[in-house]
Length: 489
Ligand code: ASP
Image 1: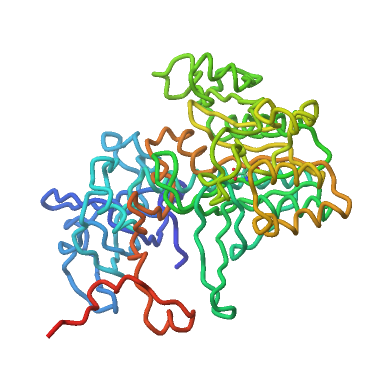
Image 2 (image 1 turned 180 degrees about the horizontal axis):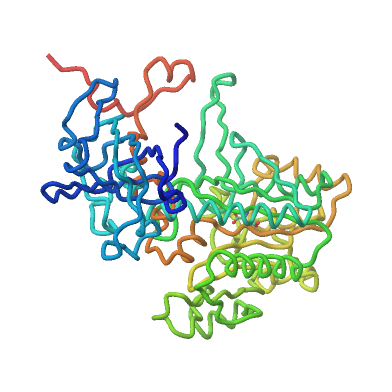
């Protein structure tokens, strides 16, 4: 018999159905026993009564057993039975299938469940996070977590559809690549074929998306994983995160801001109708004004901070192109330069300020735009430099050595083959979804996040490599692997 989902039972009164799923709860009332069966569509009540002929049961292999009473929460079962209207007094208006129940004729236990290490019928915030991560596959059974992942998927689907409709092309860019400095430390991956050399995992696809503009795609996006070895914060996960990376040619900053504002407004209306955007068009706050008025470049401009449904988007613009910091801090540089990019080294100076690059670089404004939502920076981007000479000048100002410049030679070369003016942005999906859901941390909207100490969910990484693996890579590890030491005699 074909499987029926629990939600479909409401349309099948009087029909025999087959359901498969987990035992959500079990309630014994003497002669009658209720199980709630849970599947991806929700839950439905199953009834086992002793007044009816006791249902035939089988365990796993089809071996018959009469022990319906041994069924416990989280067992995976299959049942066949008759869908019945519940008596008026028994209707549960709180669930979509509350008007029906399934009188079970046959039950098969497909897989038994041990007692879970924690409850999953609560919101789970009070449970030790390490334990939640260790058993993340159980934690995701929690309705809040399952809902977060489902709606997150709707968010990314909405974005894909919206941008594809506007002629954007989704392109996958390499994960094994060369450093793309976004101001964080790189994760590096040793090369086996070229011993002593390393790939870097991308901090973002910044250079590739610019190269795709040189390639003539004009409109690119990618929902992409980025890797940054930086200390975790509550709105940033350790190690990796997902961003909507986007780039356009022949546009002004205005075009980028409009696109994002239109898209996210449409997204909120469609997927979060209970939320309201407090001010439209979204305020654009010059960096100087944001610092003077709010003391931050990501101001929380909600009108009522107790209103969980208020979404206050704003743009921070007119950033200075550089901040005063040593290049050493920024990019393991020579230490000779006084300037580091406020955003990244590909951000274009304001065209009116180009001459100041020679005379007073700290006065140069950058064509950077940051997207802020309820006090969180949820995205940043800029119009890019597309002139070789300007890019070289910025490299000089941030104190790049010849060797460091050589690492970006491909960009300068590309800029000699006809490059369209271009710009883009990269809203962080995790942070955006976290704020839209009103979740306290980014890990609540990720399936398998890494803990604050850098430990992965469920699987025990990072872990030691074997001696053979290291040998093959031509690497020696200075730290002896835990548990492998030579006993001194
Ligand atoms: N690459 C930048 C980032 O990841 C975003 C951008 O400039 O488009 O923050």
